[in-house]
Image (cartoon, rainbow, N blue to C red; front, top):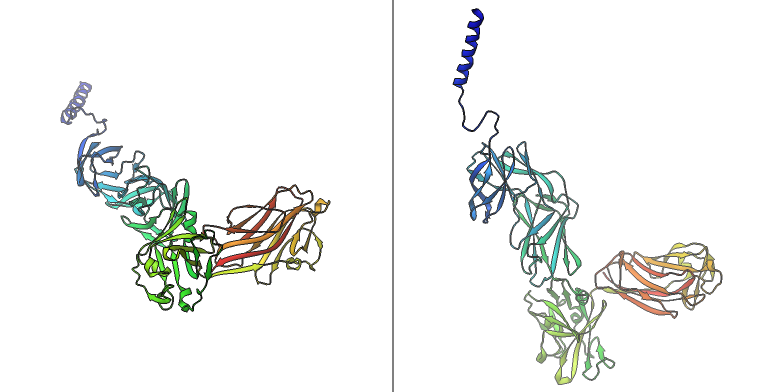
Length: 564
């Protein structure tokens, strides 16, 4: 009887507990919260476009939402669990994850950019599932294209000192507003244009990590398969939501235009007749037979790579007019520009603004078009037609501060005891020439070789000898003392070999870069001149080389034209 009573009480308690529990239709205690359709009023300072993709994070998933309108405030709609706290990320990142209140995402190293549009990356946290405020988390670098910069297909921006510019990041919300911390680092952003090619005259932006970049940025851009670079130097700081301008991409200069870039001074004037197309009878003078103001040869014109011109008219600020035989005042606007028009028939230099008075030759024939009579790294001759005289007026320019140094060598220069035939082993020795520059000679050879003075030249190797151990394969003559930019290198040299069947070549490097084109050597003493369209400086290396090793080389002299 007692056991029956206890059983009855237990059953009654269970029944009472069941009656007191509230049931939720369609949901058991073990059923997780379900995603539902949500509409969130979202504010984003960059402005929404229709159907922008957004990541909305609940505690379970990264959910795709889309904007339903345009403007700074718009409804974004999708499906997510309606929780007390939601997180957001723009643009949508399928691989982004939420953990412990932080979003793991990336500032991408490959970015497709559109003209005049910032590639915003914004994040948000909200305790109200019906509204959300997005805040930017990255910084921006801006670059422009000049109006004639056509064919730019790719742009790369790198942190010059190698700091983290992009990569995996974690976005946290210590006080609701997001903060970004780099998780992994990459120092270069590769940008491609949404349009396929970057539009001339447009501006573009790439998203980067905010921070301090100690040596600035280097930008590489590709035009017709060739890569060029420009830099924003010095320490640069860029904060969240700030834009830092890197500069403008210019149309790449042609080889001829590169020769123009730099500072040039008037060196002399001249003329040639219409019936003298080769200039054989051209009349050239530094003073045209009349006294000139000293400032006339101080006139300096600087052609800049961006197409602008700077002019210094000497101490008196006046240009000299040859026809009037007097110095004349010139008012420069600061907007002077230059361009080189290239055709199959001629090169034409066009000067705009008030650049042309520098070359005044005839008051009645003022023109902004000058034909390029001759052009090299060391001299430019410009001319224009004077029909009344059936002649061309010419002005000659040379690089400002241009200097020439000539070097000759003798056996004692390289550590030998006398200026006579001397047999020696492998040699790598310096020579301090009478010009005061240090040259170094390196020889690739057999076991021994001869070095001597013959026919007014330094002979290295004994190509006439049947003893192949005395022959030479290659030599390198180098100098690191010549300052400034190297304009040209001229070498007077020859070679010989025992059987007259070998081929040899000569080439030059400056600062480790090829300088000019390689020359095939001939067996007679000949002067070979090397020039380069780009500005190079540093160690000069003159290299004689052959696939054979039975040669001797003759070096009579080296002339270097440089600009301090």
